[in-house]
Image: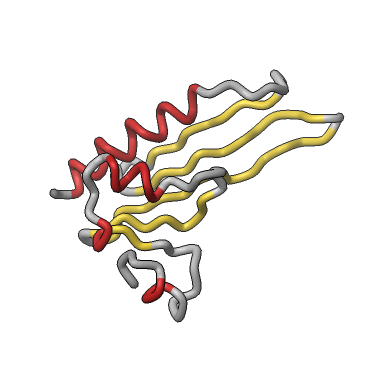
Length: 110
């Protein structure tokens, strides 16, 4: 599986998350895909109780032949969805974990 296939899988999954509406209609999700098709970020933006909301929900990046998950704010996490879509476990790095912990996750260490 090459980076173009990773790009297709990641884009499809994140586009579905971007479509999910918030209960608070003043909030919305914004999906940003880098021009190089190797960086992905899903943000929550808007106003809630007269305060600006701007937070990164997901940040993924294709580095070499691996998919790095730098930020995962989903309730169930995105790693299982990547696995179910066909990306092998040894090609996914849980980058939000400290490098010393990654060998115990069952995923790639980097």
